[in-house]
Length: 272
Image 1 (cartoon, rainbow, N blue to C red):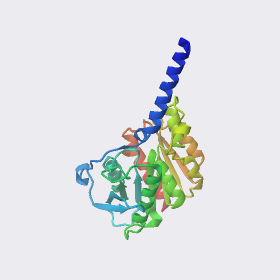
Image 2: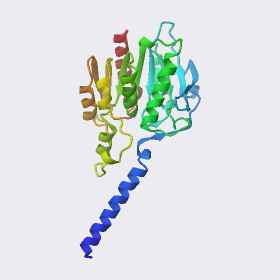
Image 3: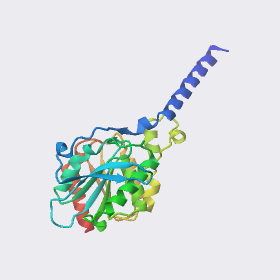
Image 4: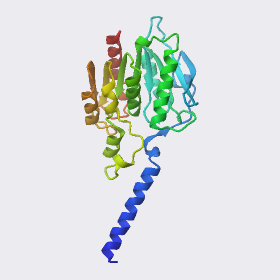
């Protein structure tokens, strides 16, 4: 065997090894759960009820229901987290919405926030259904004022639920077309289309969503390319609104910034 053939064989074996490792450990490239959840008061939350949400496959999810300080009938926002951290990281968003008279449900997916189970696409969809069943069963929640808020990975979870259980409105922060396209953007040297098990094809589910939608994106997003968010927005049925803020994926302005909160509150006001 020639030296050139040896080099090519070595390269081929190395490439195959990288692809095999990527396939075996792909979940660690998608989901970044944190288990330790501090008490709600430690992250600045008030009027909090700790809740437990049973899933159809026998798990129990932990969450916080943050009530409105207003006596008026409030809108309720269910937050579908991104792929990292836990519900405590969304406390600033909940606090900001609460100050505008909005109730908020924060919860953790399976495998997050100390919950049992392992996150998968099917599992997160099941978790979303469990959360919906729980929240519409509460006497203090008006189903006609129920809003889904999905951030990043959670945008795909929220879109899938909205296609099954339409809310009054849907807010998507940094949404993407599909996890396959996000993977191809970040790992162009891998055959992502062939490797990926969890695909989160929001671009397909969004075509079945029939409610007002607000899309919020950052103009310098390095995690979800702006063009993906735009293409998803283009596939949404009217009425819809696109708000482009200055910033990257995890900048404060895209977590609970004043401009983002103002856009959400304005959107909620148009629904009632």
